[in-house]
Length: 170
Image 1 (cartoon, rainbow, N blue to C red):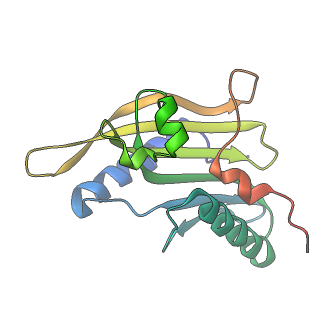
Image 2 (image 1 turned 90 degrees about the vertical axis):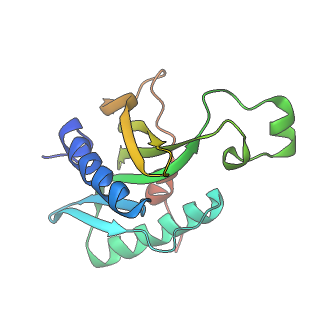
C-alpha cells in the first residue's frame, strides 16, 4: 500500500507549498487523505478555525462526512502555517494563557502532521519561514523531520488529526 506519510510525498507537497507561499505570501491549510479503495484525496480547509477546540470539531465533522461519502480514512496528513517558539513557555505565560502567536520571540513555520488511522505511524516536521526586507517569504529546511515513523514511548502520536479518528457516538 502506498502511503502519504513518507518523505517523498512530504517533499512533493513542501515544494508545492513553497511555490504557493512565494506566490500568495501565505498558505491555505490543506488536508491529504488516503482513503480505502479510493487513494489520495486533497481537501482545502476553507474557513479553518483558529482555536484548538474549534479545529478539532471541524476535523471531526469533516471526517464524518468523508466516511459517509467516500469510505474509511486510512491516513491523514495536514500542512498549514503555524507560529512556533524554540523554548518552553514560561510559568507566567502558562498561567496567563499566552498563545504562541502572541509571544514576542515567535517564528513563522510550515507544519506537517500526519498519522495512520490506528495511530501506529506518524509524520511530523516543521519548516521555518524567513521573510526578506520586503516581506517576501521563503522556506528553510525541515526541522526535526519524522517520516512514517512507528510510534514508541519516545515518538508520540498526539496531534490535531486525532480528532479525525475519534469514535463519534451517533
